[in-house]
Structure formats: structure tokens, C-alpha cells
Amino acid sequence: MLKYALLGFLNYQDASGYDLKQLMDVSTSNFWHAKQSQIYTTLKKLEKEGFVISHIEAQESRPNRRVYEITESGQIDLKKWLSQPLMTIESRKETLLLKLFFSAQLDPQVVLTELRLQRNLHQSQLKKYQTTTKDVIQQFASSLDMQEDARLWEATRRFGESYEEMYIRWLDETIEEISDA
Amino acid sequence: MLKYALLGFLNYQDASGYDLKQLMDVSTSNFWHAKQSQIYTTLKKLEKEGFVISHIEAQESRPNRRVYEITESGQIDLKKWLSQPLMTIESRKETLLLKLFFSAQLDPQVVLTELRLQRNLHQSQLKKYQTTTKDVIQQFASSLDMQEDARLWEATRRFGESYEEMYIRWLDETIEEISDA
DNA sequence: GTTTTATATATAATCTTTTATATATAAAGG
DNA sequence: CCTTTATATATAAAAGATTATATATAAAAC
Image 1 (tube, chains in turn cyan, blue, red, brown):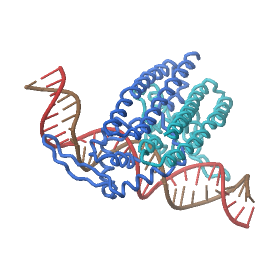
Image 2: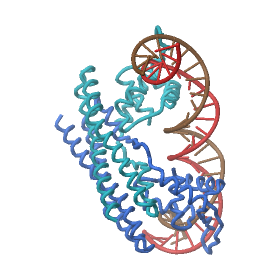
Image 3: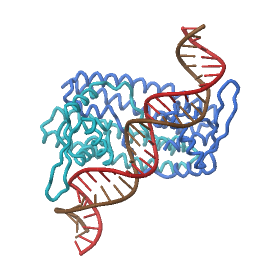
Image 4: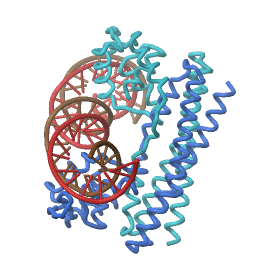
């Protein structure tokens, strides 16, 4: 699936592996992320399969960049993937819930400490969506003059925001429930 | 991490690979799932590492079962993992959001069809948490006489319920937003 | 002046997960 | 009578993802 994340970005503009990593980190990291090594190996694979092509760009006082460009074949494949509806919902992996599920024999104070720590972390994440992420989207939209595209970017940001609000509410309820026991 | 899911279940009672797959499917699948093949290979690995031991149980008119039991080493390792707080929050991978993020050039009707389909699927999942999953937890709790443990199981179920409620609200808002455009 | 941060790519090794395949039997449904 | 479902385990192959390591330079921070 990382394939389509990369093609999706390259469909907007040419970019190097480094650029793509930066782009993902400030935009899709909420719902899609990848390690640097995976991005570079996937780009190589996509070039071998003909979905992208690359050329070296020399720079003064900086290492050379390998800039990737989406091919027509890549654009067709991307559009096909986007048009085909997902027939299932995804099931997440949430380590915190796995731990909680098996924590009955544990000292409740240990569990509460963990839940409170998670609350802090999710609170920070929520603030990030409401400030940094929101700003990044607005900047991208105005600099590229893509107010229409920005509506969908905003929708994905709101998902992250709603998710964190829900998570914090659930943590508060669960902390109270365990405290009362 | 599947390691700890398996040890967590085996800490309640001995079970075969088949049993563990069934157990996960009706209890933790909300936030933790695994394929049959992965469960069997992980159990083999855990036995080699001394966290579990197994013996063959003969059955009449059914294939033999290999029943696993947690060792003291396994119990210690599980407890250690449970006690150690997670220092980060997890970032999900949501294919629907990835598609939406790159769908600006697509016909809005195609996007709306996908979102409405997802709404149906999430509505079904929500109902499942409110009925089947809730019942399964109550049955387990009374059959094993573990009302205390059930409070935490209930907390993880409520997470699934809240998540689906949030997801449906977000889908409704996003569908409206795209319809208006 | 030395360390850290940012720019930039690449590969090896490992771990995790999924898909596919093989085998075997009995009960239940049609 | 035939097909499907449920019970039960196991491994091979492939795909996907993480961790670690290597190299190189310049600007900024301390």
C-alpha cells in the first residue's frame, strides 16, 4: 500500500525519497507512515516495474538527489486503485488495549499510571492536529493553490482530531472505572 | 507482540493453536488479530524459547491436539511486559484515509460511493460490539467466574464501540462536506 | 571548537505478517 | 448422496516493515 502513498504524492509533483519522507511526516503520518529505508526500497521496486522513472539531480554543497517522476502507467494504476472501493473495514492493532485486556492480575496502580501517561501523549497529539497539522494543510493549499484538494486533506486531519478526542474520553472513563474498583 | 497475546491467553488456561485462534477471533480481534499460520509458528518459537511447553492430546474421531501451557518463565515475561508502560502512542494505518487524501481529482460520486459503503460496514461492526461481543464477554465472565477481569474486557469492548461511533460520525460529516462541494 | 541538526542515498539483516498449500475426519445441511 | 462446515496442525513462499549500518557535507547551535 506504501506504493500508492508514494504514487499519490508523485502525482502532485516530482520528489526524491528524502522529500517523500518529509512530506509523509507532515501530512499523512496520522494515518500512513513509513521508514526511510522502506521508502527507498519501494521506489526502486516501483521504477523496476515502470510506475516511476528517476534521474540524478546534482547539487552544489549538498549530496546528489535522485528525483522520481510518476509515469503514465503509474498514474493509471493509482487512479484504478483510488476508484476501486474497499470492501472491508480495517482492524487496528492497539498494544495498549492488548495490555489492558490481560492486566486483571496486575496492581491497579500500575495500570492507572500507564493510562494517565497515555492520556498525556494523546493530549499532545490532539493539540498537534489542531495546530501544526492544520497550519501545514493551509500552507500547502495556498502555496500550491489547491483549495479543493485541501478539503479532503482537512477531512483526514479531522479524523485524527476526532480519534484523539474519542481516545481521551475513553481513557478518562476507563481511569475512573478502574479507580472506583 | 503476538507473543504476549498468546501468553496472555495461556495465562488463563491451556489451549491449542486452534483454540487460541478461536479465542482471539471472539475477544481481542477488535484490537488484536493474527492469522492461523502465524499463531502456529509463533507457538513453536515460544516453545523453543521456553515460554511455553506443549503435549499431544489424543482425541477420538478428531485430529490430535497439541495443547500449550505457559511456563514460569513465560509468566514472568508476560508480567514484566504488562508492567512496563508504553512510552509512545501508536499510529494507525488507515487505507480509507490514504485513498481519500489523494482523491481530489476523482469524480466525487466515486468517493461518495466508497464512503457510504464504509458507513454500512462500520455500522455493522458497531452493532456487533453492542451485541455479540458484549454477550461473549458476559458469558466468559460468568463461566469462568471472573467478574473483575470482565471489567477490563468491557473497557476494551467500549473502545471498539466508541471508535465505530466516532468513525460513523466522521463519515457522515465527510459525506455531507463532499456532497455540498 | 565541537557537537548537533539537516541534507541525501543505499543496503543488509531481521522480524512480522499474509497467502497458499497440504492433509485428515466427522457432522450437518441440502 | 454430495457438499459444506467444523475440527485440527503444519510448512513454504512471498510480501511488508523495522533496525542497523555506512557514507558525506554544511550549517547552526552551544
